[in-house]
Structures are given as C-alpha cells and as structure tokens.
Image (cartoon, rainbow, N blue to C red; front, side):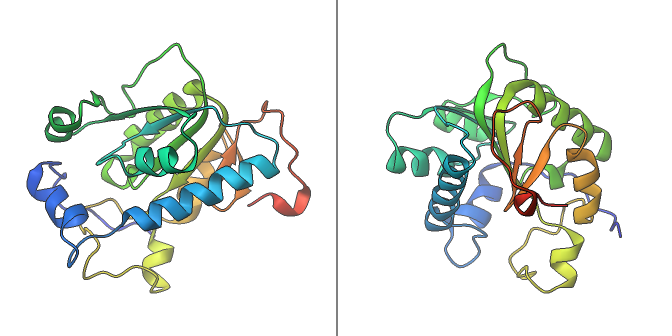
Length: 202
C-alpha cells in the first residue's frame, strides 16, 4: 500500500525544533539512538563485521555521532545532510544521499529516517550510492505503512509530509545490494561475515 505524500519537506530550523528539540513533540531521543547504536555494534561484532569507520547518511542533529562517541572513541565518523540549516550549524557536508560521492568505503553506513522524504527514483539512486560507499553493513530504518497499520507509530508526533511505503517495497530495493541480517541491519554480499540461516531476514 502506498499513500500519497503532501508537499516535500523543508529541513529548516522549525522542522528540527519540532521533531528533535522539543520534548513534547520530538520523534526520537538521544537515549533511543544510543540503544540502537549499542545493538548495531554488538550485532555486527557477533556477525564478525569490524566497525572502525561509520558514514551517517542524513546525519541530522548528530545523534549517531554522539552515541558512537560515547560507545567507542576510536570510531572514525563522517556525516552529511541535505539541510542547509544543519550544515551551517554543525559543519556537516551538505549533500543528499543520492548525490553523495566518495572514494572511501565505510565499515558501517547508517541511514535512519531519511528515505521517507524521497520520491521513488531518488530512493533507488540513494541505495546505489550507499552500496558504493559501504564495505560492511548498513543500518536502515524508515517508517512504513505496515508500522502505521499495526499502530506502532505515534501519528500525533509522526511527520505526515512523507512518502509512506510498505516494508516489502524497501526490502525489494535493498535486496539489489544487500543481504538482510534482521534488526534493520543489512550486510554487503561480499562482506566477510558469518550470517547463519536463521539470522537472515526476508
């Protein structure tokens, strides 16, 4: 199921104040991201995927940078974001995911709550760009129609100016580049990982 979006989001100061900085309306917290980062790093250690370098594709306010710094100071972090406001404020590289290019390859790419703001063709280009920059694993998270229908999202807080797609819609596109390891973790097919049959997602 696909729901039509309204106008494309402007990632300005008002957007981040509402969804990140105001505790009464925010959709995510530093504690939530810290828990996710702990899980992802522990799971990748279990899968024997070493993580020394991290690319944060759509880094927003830098919650993943903060979490990774708190977990392991030695991790080399690089973030970029399309928001001119945030790039001025935090010094990120300004880029969309689809347009991002680098000669580096990263052990882990993080892309959380980003692709729901993209039209379909841009999502396709973004997954290809991530795959080019990734040599180990991707952590990917996005709100889906399945989550809305199952009542897992607080729609009073969730930004509704997004493209709402099914989980399978994303899985089909992820399968072109990655192997689903479950828990939002996807590994490169050529990564030297130990992924048992029951650890693989659909």
